Image (cartoon, rainbow, N blue to C red; front, side, top):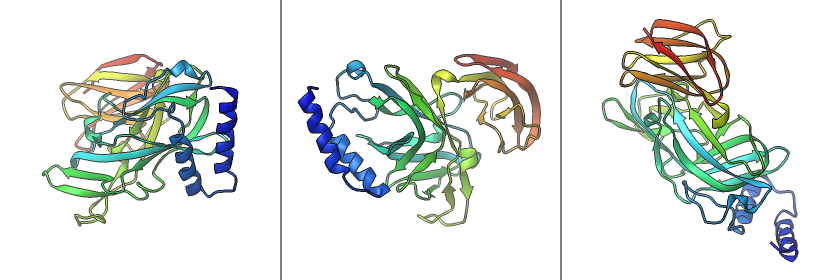
Length: 297
């Protein structure tokens, strides 16, 4: 971009942010700024053309989502309409998705994930919070084990959004892959007997964000449908709901994978019908590696 072009853009942005706007106004105005920048590429694994190297101060980034199992549902769907990220000491940047599709969270276990947004450019720096803004018309629904469909009540899901407090860093010229761990086992609450917008199930998400290149995994074998939980090594009390676990999964086809774990020491615990089957302590995870623990009870 030529210098006079930069001046025009700077003048345009100043004209938009020339007051002290509220947060909602900031979000709306940020959308307006983004709409003026065709090089800021957004969408579901889609790009608008161009090169990530076109701006040395920005880098490409991909967001994916994964999940942990629950016992009383066959499917749990959410529909993401947009995202927002908060750069340290700067305003929120809202990222509308060009497409929005339902994501079945329960299909994303044992290391499986689904990419839902790919940004060709994002300014380098540290981001302290991420939010997922859900669809206003159909934010989420649940299909129980009997095949009955229920509306999911998701407080503020389509307003302020689902909040992820984990930080991440975008480095100049380095492509980044991030995964949001949507732990349904901790998030799904049974609230009543209705089957409507104020119905039986409420989603109060417990989310964590992992930088893929900085994480590893734990893999092993076991009997199908056994629940496997990875606890920090500092935890010494293990309960069947895995409330204090970093992540959980279920054995499927004789194998399991506990994914997107920060390097460190973990205790792997297996449960079946609320009964503890076995414990493996001192399981060390390293970045970009899979730690094998063999056969679980």
